Image (cartoon, rainbow over all chains, first blue to last red; front, side, top):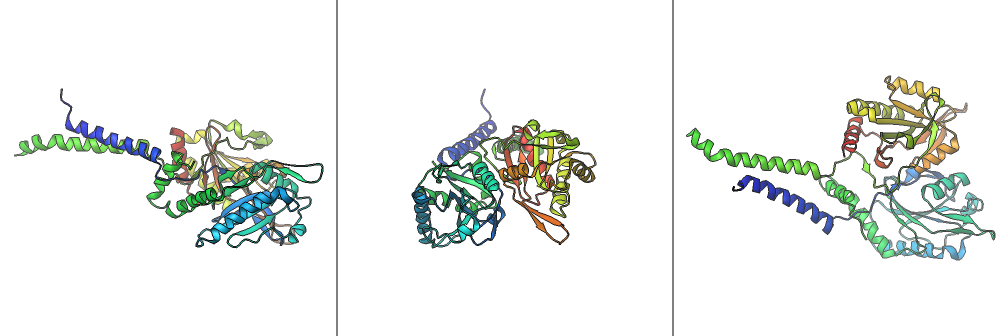
Length: 222
Length: 205
């Protein structure tokens, strides 16, 4: 029995749809960073005594780091990373929303607001706003140790053991990347940051569907 | 003449209609649902907690697995944002019809000084007389911990010298799916009907 031409047409259309989906998943024409978890809600203070809340980050991109002012060499790699990112971004035209650095202290007993007021960070960024935040120990434990998942433990000699972590949070307060390393590959970070900028700029109207599909099919960079 | 048209065009037209229907059915089957909020790819279940619920009974989030949970943080003296959102939640439950039986709206107080379980129950019954909204409260330290985990900022803001205060807070609505994973984050102002569409989709996929 001959197959009717309209059944053939329907089969071809179905095959085209399936092939298009496979192509999207394999070729990954749209890459996104995953929406991993919610960044914590908080209300902390910076060195000037100004209250900084998680809501202040709405509509901005934030790279969180965790350190303490007496950290010394243990934090050199973090500062080198932040300086290198700042230098890379300073060479580019400014983009919206701007990236900001927030370093949350893991040593609230010593890093009081007064201590932070007199603290000079190891470099002055050219392109990125950089804030150090402190607050009550309990709240910092909830924020850094709990929600951001940073491992830290005071040592007997007064220093603090910690596992360096960088967390990129988007303007909706969603964690988009976590880097567990003392020194971040700046090039890789900037490439991934570009993906977030592309999504912000392009995921509008019908293109939003392509970006949602990229999230749905986990089209993440390697 | 009519017979000629019938015999010549009936099958092609039928074929075209079948082809179009096939495309629409396939497209609906494979396209990602467009959610009203931001979809998360949480690799771990939502942070679990136990708070005090109606009748001062403990309520654990993980005990609600099997239902879609909509979490919202606020307080009963909240002048605008909280009642507006809770009315949207009521509308969402109305729009869900029978699916509302498998949907829980959980209102977590960030004002434990004033919001006793009794006060919350009375407040929520006023918004939804059908009693479908669940109010939870607890110790401030516990609430701080939970709020941080769910991206909720809250801070008291005194407005007079006699102890009156408002609480500034994040007003997102968080959808936790039947398996206990945080799936969608809704900004303040998302219509209840739109959230109902997402809940229905999640229940059927």
